[in-house]
Amino acid sequence: MNEAMKAYKQALTLDENNIISLQCIGWLSFQLEKLKDALTYINKANLINEDDTDILYMKARCYLKQKQYSHSYDCLNKCLTLDGENSTFWCSLGILFAEMNQVLRDSHFLN
Image (tube, rainbow, N blue to C red):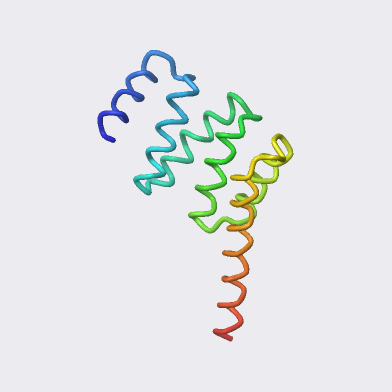
């Protein structure tokens, strides 16, 4: 994974708006649980192409991992608006709702 990260970062030195490199660095950072870094690269890619569902999905996953549920929902909602037949987006939305519901149940249990 480190070699891939180095290669994508090298590509960014040649073209700082290389959307593939930005996406890949973002996803690799997500996998390494460096969520702040992941969102930095993914957001930059999203500025280049606001309607790329791969980028929006990665943002949704990062936000979900950070428990920023409304941001995750917004990204998934846009994914579904752009590609309503993608089962991955629908499943992720279900996971988001299930996690939100668990948080609500836990908060009621604690009170």
